[in-house]
Image 1 (cartoon, rainbow, N blue to C red):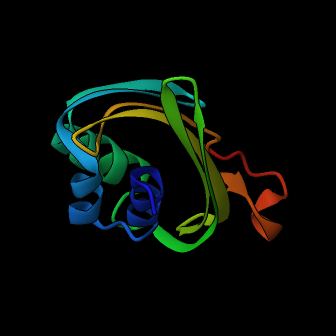
Image 2: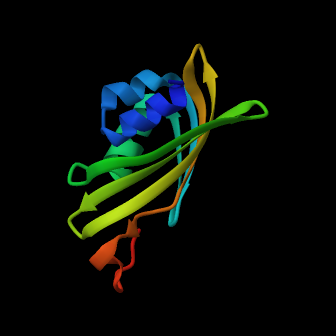
Image 3: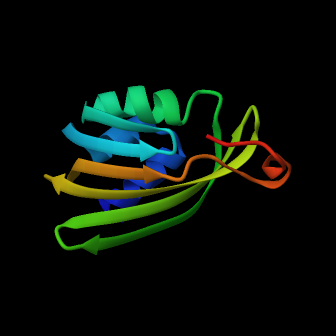
Length: 130
């Protein structure tokens, strides 16, 4: 399993230590979600403030990692993953595309584009998702 897949599986488990193990301490991170862009310069800032502090908060339950795909393109690698989540407002799917480079086997440059929370089932009937 490559570091991108390890990262995706740790995200799905909301495993802070596992996510940090996949990240180089000095991280060049940029990300975009439907309503905002994000930046971080360290793995801990990215994980604590953005990933587990905002994107997947303590009340969000990740029910399943539906899919993980990895690939390489020129001088970057890619991991794509789809999550099934439950929030107070319902059930959602979310997909992220991440491009990354590594230093010493850990992700040191990371770009993530996120689909946002897409409603599933009854939640899809007229409720906007973020």
